Length: 116
Image (tube, rainbow, N blue to C red; front, side):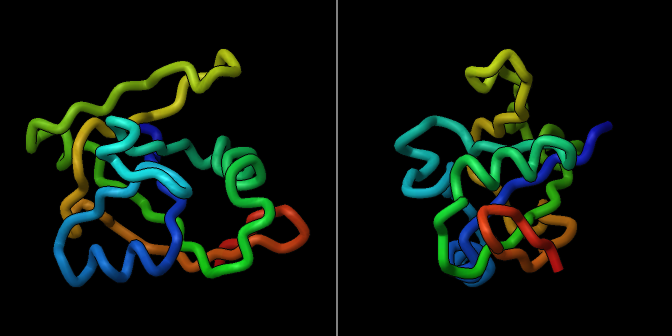
Protein backbone atom coordinates (compact mmCIF):
# COMPACT_ATOMS: atom_id res chain seq x y z
CA UNK A 1 0.00 0.00 0.00
CA UNK A 2 1.21 3.50 -0.83
CA UNK A 3 2.12 5.68 2.13
CA UNK A 4 -0.64 8.13 2.97
CA UNK A 5 0.67 11.51 4.11
CA UNK A 6 -1.06 14.61 5.39
CA UNK A 7 0.65 17.99 5.65
CA UNK A 8 -0.52 19.82 8.76
CA UNK A 9 0.16 23.01 10.61
CA UNK A 10 2.12 22.04 13.72
CA UNK A 11 -0.27 23.88 16.06
CA UNK A 12 -3.19 21.76 14.81
CA UNK A 13 -1.22 18.55 15.28
CA UNK A 14 -0.24 19.56 18.82
CA UNK A 15 -3.91 20.23 19.61
CA UNK A 16 -4.82 16.79 18.22
CA UNK A 17 -2.15 15.11 20.34
CA UNK A 18 -3.85 16.59 23.41
CA UNK A 19 -7.43 15.86 22.36
CA UNK A 20 -6.72 12.52 20.68
CA UNK A 21 -8.46 13.50 17.43
CA UNK A 22 -7.27 15.38 14.33
CA UNK A 23 -9.97 16.97 12.18
CA UNK A 24 -8.35 19.53 9.87
CA UNK A 25 -8.79 19.05 6.14
CA UNK A 26 -6.23 21.45 4.72
CA UNK A 27 -4.94 24.97 5.27
CA UNK A 28 -7.79 27.14 6.50
CA UNK A 29 -10.42 24.38 6.36
CA UNK A 30 -11.71 21.78 8.76
CA UNK A 31 -13.01 18.27 8.09
CA UNK A 32 -16.47 19.69 8.76
CA UNK A 33 -15.96 22.37 6.09
CA UNK A 34 -14.73 20.02 3.35
CA UNK A 35 -16.06 16.56 4.27
CA UNK A 36 -12.70 14.80 4.12
CA UNK A 37 -9.05 15.20 5.08
CA UNK A 38 -6.80 15.99 2.12
CA UNK A 39 -3.83 13.61 1.87
CA UNK A 40 -1.18 12.71 -0.67
CA UNK A 41 1.40 10.11 -1.57
CA UNK A 42 5.08 10.79 -0.97
CA UNK A 43 5.49 11.68 -4.66
CA UNK A 44 2.56 14.12 -4.56
CA UNK A 45 3.54 15.83 -1.30
CA UNK A 46 6.04 18.41 -2.69
CA UNK A 47 3.55 19.65 -5.29
CA UNK A 48 0.71 19.80 -2.75
CA UNK A 49 2.93 21.67 -0.27
CA UNK A 50 3.98 24.20 -2.90
CA UNK A 51 0.39 24.77 -3.98
CA UNK A 52 -1.17 25.13 -0.53
CA UNK A 53 1.63 26.25 1.79
CA UNK A 54 4.14 28.10 -0.43
CA UNK A 55 3.74 31.34 1.53
CA UNK A 56 3.17 29.74 4.94
CA UNK A 57 5.69 31.12 7.45
CA UNK A 58 4.97 28.73 10.33
CA UNK A 59 6.06 25.24 11.27
CA UNK A 60 4.50 22.27 9.51
CA UNK A 61 4.44 18.55 10.16
CA UNK A 62 4.09 15.64 7.74
CA UNK A 63 1.79 13.04 9.28
CA UNK A 64 2.33 9.48 8.10
CA UNK A 65 -1.01 7.68 8.41
CA UNK A 66 -1.81 4.04 9.12
CA UNK A 67 -4.25 3.40 6.25
CA UNK A 68 -5.18 -0.17 7.25
CA UNK A 69 -5.99 0.92 10.84
CA UNK A 70 -8.11 3.81 9.56
CA UNK A 71 -10.08 1.55 7.24
CA UNK A 72 -10.40 -1.17 9.91
CA UNK A 73 -12.13 1.44 12.08
CA UNK A 74 -14.70 2.03 9.34
CA UNK A 75 -13.28 5.32 8.02
CA UNK A 76 -13.27 5.34 4.23
CA UNK A 77 -10.18 6.32 2.24
CA UNK A 78 -11.01 7.21 -1.35
CA UNK A 79 -8.51 7.99 -4.10
CA UNK A 80 -10.12 10.86 -5.97
CA UNK A 81 -9.26 13.33 -8.70
CA UNK A 82 -7.70 16.42 -7.15
CA UNK A 83 -8.74 18.54 -10.13
CA UNK A 84 -5.64 17.81 -12.18
CA UNK A 85 -6.52 14.25 -13.25
CA UNK A 86 -4.30 12.76 -10.54
CA UNK A 87 -5.81 10.63 -7.76
CA UNK A 88 -5.21 11.80 -4.19
CA UNK A 89 -6.14 9.92 -1.01
CA UNK A 90 -9.01 11.53 0.90
CA UNK A 91 -9.86 10.33 4.42
CA UNK A 92 -13.61 10.61 5.11
CA UNK A 93 -13.53 11.04 8.85
CA UNK A 94 -11.48 12.30 11.77
CA UNK A 95 -8.12 10.75 12.58
CA UNK A 96 -7.38 9.23 15.95
CA UNK A 97 -3.95 10.15 17.26
CA UNK A 98 -2.89 6.48 17.29
CA UNK A 99 -3.45 6.24 13.52
CA UNK A 100 -0.50 8.56 12.95
CA UNK A 101 2.54 6.29 12.61
CA UNK A 102 5.04 9.14 12.46
CA UNK A 103 5.12 12.93 12.53
CA UNK A 104 8.00 14.56 10.63
CA UNK A 105 8.76 18.27 11.26
CA UNK A 106 8.71 20.34 8.08
CA UNK A 107 8.76 23.91 6.80
CA UNK A 108 8.56 25.81 3.57
CA UNK A 109 11.80 27.36 2.26
CA UNK A 110 11.55 29.49 -0.88
CA UNK A 111 8.27 27.80 -1.79
CA UNK A 112 9.64 24.26 -1.39
CA UNK A 113 8.89 21.74 1.37
CA UNK A 114 11.84 20.79 3.59
CA UNK A 115 11.21 17.80 5.86
CA UNK A 116 13.37 17.17 8.89
